[in-house]
Image 1 (cartoon, one colour):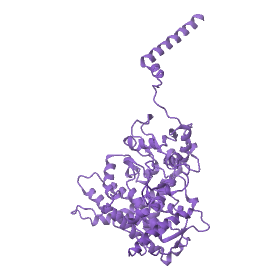
Image 2 (tube, rainbow, N blue to C red):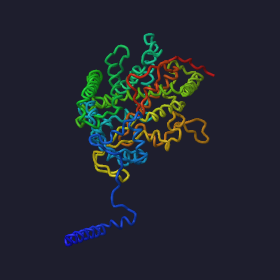
Image 3 (cartoon, rainbow, N blue to C red):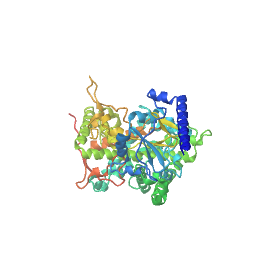
Image 4 (cartoon, rainbow, N blue to C red):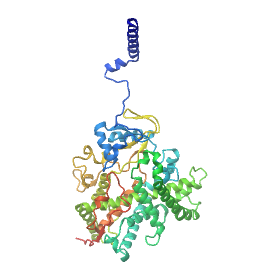
Amino acid sequence: MVAATMFWILLSCASTLYFVLMCMKRGVFGARLRGKSPERKSLRGPLSLPLIGSMYKLGSPEGPFAVFTDLSHKYGQIFEMQLGVSKCVIVSSYALIKEVLITKGGHFGGRPDFLRFHHLFGGDRNNSLALCDWSDLQRKRRSIARSFCSPRGGSSQQEEISRVAVDEIAQMFEYLEDPRNAEILAGERPVKPIVLAAVANMFTKYMCSTRFDYYQDEEFKHVTRAFDDIFWDINQGYAVDFLPWLKVFYSGHLTRLSDWANDIRGFILRRIIEPRRASLDLDTEIPRDFTDALLFHLQSTQSELSWQHILFELEDFLGGHSAVGNLVMMVLANAVIHPEIQTRIQEECDAVIRGKLERGVEVGSLMVSPRDKPQLPYTESVIWETLRVSSSPIVPHVATCDTDISGYPVAKDTMVFLNNYSLNLGEEYWGADARQFKPERFLKREEGETVDRVSRPDFFMPFSTGKRTCIGQKLVQGFAFVTVTMLLAKYNVSAPPTVDVTKSIQSSCLALPPDCFNLIFTKRKLPVSS
């Protein structure tokens, strides 16, 4: 017995000595003595349960991104979570988000493989520019769109955006003031479908040289509603995104997504692409619009584009009108919630109108225009503040290779959430009043200057940044500015006594429910020259 005990003692000592020698050989002790760990950084995160991971943490009325922000106070500005079948990393600081989007943008070019995304784009989310994984084909598709969707200031496309927007607002005013639509102005019928239709026509007129009738075209009304349903849905989170085995319980929902998308696709093909293809002049080298540019590339013998590519690309960009329409409605909601903000916008508009009248300019019903933007800094700042407080989340990215973020290892296929909520509402970025609606935070006046100008900090990135930045952001900004400014210049906006607009506003979401609040529009008196 004693001999056996001594044997195990000697064996243990020999093992310990071998371990020490190996550690010395590898420099482990030396590294620790120098204050350096030989191990790579490891991420912390909440407890993961079988099957659901840490999804139990996300049940908050403020939404998952508010939860991410709270968890970052415990686990740091970068931490990990297992959400169902998906390994996720959440980054919540400007420096880390910039590393993901810019410094290492090539490592994080993927998108989540959610079932909903596939149902929206013909069974393959890579048909979508926004929801696809990055590839040479997607780079080519973006390059075709860039001159039309991200035009340079002073370019013909920029001028066309302004002209189209102003013309369409004139059509919208004519529609609203028709006696048949008095109930809309009185707040007895919803205005959102009209705002969406007007903005949709801005997109189709600019991109396709086509507009549709508010009154008679029932298919157009149906399609704008379908786009809005999809915009609302895509801004929500569902358990099936992370627990795909729940698909059987979401079959009806997924079918509705496919039906909406198919209706939209059929409309674009029959009402826009096919008529344009029949009249396409291949002898000219100058496209009339974005639709022509896509068709020219399709006809080229060197093109990689197929019919599917151009159909889905046009659908992607036309769908941008839903974001603009919802943004406009959100600005109007804030103008109702904060009447002093509405008053200040109108004072700014009135000053522009008086200046025109004094110069002998006939303003008519279109009292302000995009050319007046430099004189309307407060109005522009209200739009930026609306985007800030809504904190609409950036679409998650996915690691396309084994990489790291600030030295923390991130495995291929890991989903990365960029916590825009923390960036947009964090006191470390915006001060103690970060949660207040305060448009003047975007106004700046340098010493010696007599007027305010709009200034946006680098850490404010409502359209993301890097190679996957929103390519249509200039369309969003241009069309939203014109619609908001002209509506508030012409009307006082209020809510019916029984309507609480705040109930429709969801934290961390720019989208409003398709059926949200009604508003009352009371015509204002035209300012007179001083």
